[in-house]
Length: 156
Image 1 (cartoon, rainbow, N blue to C red):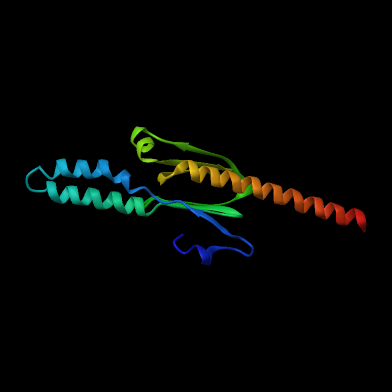
Image 2: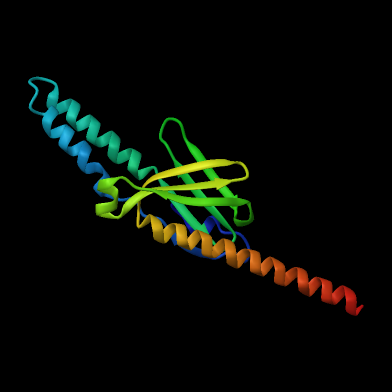
């Protein structure tokens, strides 16, 4: 997902790329600081936990185009989404207290093929709004094209 331009199709346009909030790593850093106080392996364990969390956050991506939503998350168990906008059923946002304070959360996208939960997304309400706006535009464009085809068929 890093190179959006190469994955775009035909008349598809990039709309928005969700950013992952690095604020989500704060609880892990606090845990790491506590673990670093443990003699011998505490500092090593703390470093490993923090690095794993950062790698996990860096593995999350969500891109909205004029035709589809592309998403990816997970390191060991990966889940990849490439859903046309007409297959999107619902988009919701989940936030805890810290997420509400720092404006990040989980974007949940339900499609005809499954549900995808992309955690630690910055400005999740903006992402949800962008997805829903593109779904509406996509549906309006589809209806317009059907009306044009019907008009051409009648005029023949």
